[in-house]
Length: 94
Image (cartoon, rainbow, N blue to C red; front, top):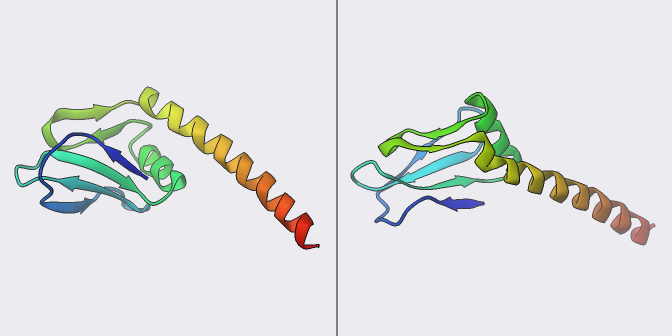
């Protein structure tokens, strides 16, 4: 998933999490352009690493826990849908 934070010309990507696949795209001046997480689980891990608040270090961009509560709800719904889909597919194969 990619969260676009602002427009700008991409310069490079930085690792954002020590334990999860979450990356920050920045421009030449260090402005955060976007945040990429390879899964909802990775995004949740990055948020957890920072005590429930995802702070983008460049140019005072701060995204609070409240901003990501919708993502957490979406993750729960997606996980439940995936479990049900897997059960249905398993039953179809058997």
